[in-house]
Length: 262
Image (cartoon, rainbow, N blue to C red; front, side, top):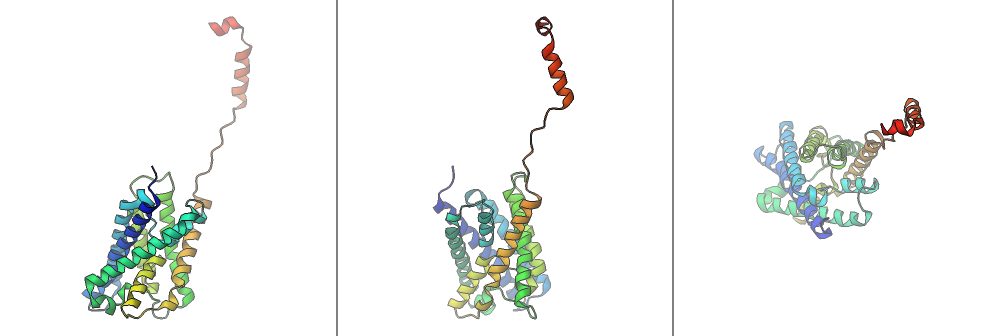
């Protein structure tokens, strides 16, 4: 029985809230432990936090809503005809609300330090251009969506591995593009912290927000199309009977009825 739309939206809201609370929360934890400084080893700590949060959300809600927890994933599945366009907007809204709730929980937990440390909001690194940011986000999201297609969408995939593999794919992407863009890979993950930072008077780079939409959307669509082109299972035509099989069948039919009975 398919869960109701309300149950699926609730699952998306909770899943995205978990992603932000513990993924983005790991950013604030690393900054708190480092006295406001974030070194590259800290990026590894953050990548692990995101990997675990995503794995938990997927294992909890995959059977309910598909555990998209990312507008880029929802869009790619809709474009490749694996998800209803009618439900795209409600899923987007649930994901954005979930990310905002997750960010509010971080402010409630870390207090003013959450705002002082940027609320986990993403921004371009020093010397990184707008175009480079789009490419970096697209490349990182490509790896994420490729994992989604391989272990969550493809029916040939072994059961029970989706959360772990997708979480590790996100961790790998953050390790590479994190120093460039913050490694968002998810418009909702950027929107929630940005909105909460704005509400509490923190500094927000809203002018950069479009790149955190374009990059993930481009990367997810490219991965979905690439997977369908390269790895999607083809229909296997029924084998035509061989010539010797046909001749043997014909000879059998020619035998006298008495022989057939024997």
